[in-house]
Length: 335
Image 1 (cartoon, rainbow, N blue to C red):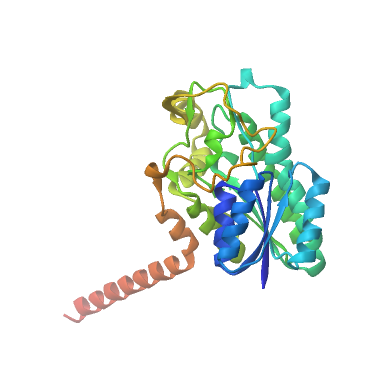
Image 2 (image 1 turned 45 degrees about the vertical axis):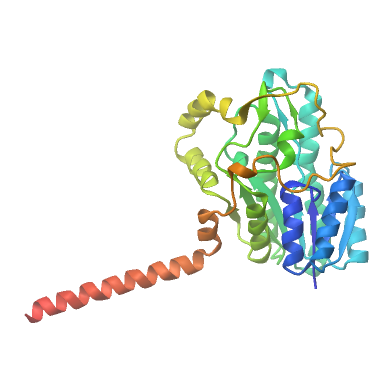
């Protein structure tokens, strides 16, 4: 019997991941602020025949995260996998951002990962086993305009995780840590985050359904590697940043504002989830409002998930081709 804990489990990627882990045979600890969303996630886990434990809390509270880890091990058993996924963002030009907004996004999107990692690692290291999955983003490596707080927090998460990897190697630990970098996803966050945009926020196409992300997370938990990139756009962002960051600065400066907004006007008075959850009373599920524009399958993800088979097939084809060339050359000499 395996046990996973997922933060940000009430909606979006975390909600889809909770279902995916339950279907893969895991009992699931569910952490988030929104009680209605957590109840919905609990029902879906139980429908898959697995146990669920609802843990309503804010991951910015380190003591609450630590207590939740204790509760999971008391009720469900030793934690095998911990998925850090909870996030907040603010869509706004930097000139209009407030210091408290940067603080709050950092508390959840960066320090929430630190708190979850510490809680998991303290328990896993005693048993010398377990996997920590950090749900990352292409924006952890290539920042875009209008999301400076979120991009900075994701960059910080990468720095923290790289340090952790080095220490795990030094300690000869069998605990694994892996980062799954996500593309644009169809989640409810675009109607939840605080926004100063003129148009309603949208993920930058191509857009993928959260189930694509969930499949990648489960795969990374069971076949941990240093990083797993989800979607062709993530690959392009990472390689573009390595090869031509200045060109990307120019390109995103010209296109990054329009690509993150729809033609529909944003309501400047709508509530947001920066201080309090929007799924406290109503369950919004995993999907956002972009179902008709979202892809349910990623060829790039399938290739990277099964890269061993791909390399073996390519090697076999190359060997066969080489054998044909050698045979052809032999026939030519014989003639």
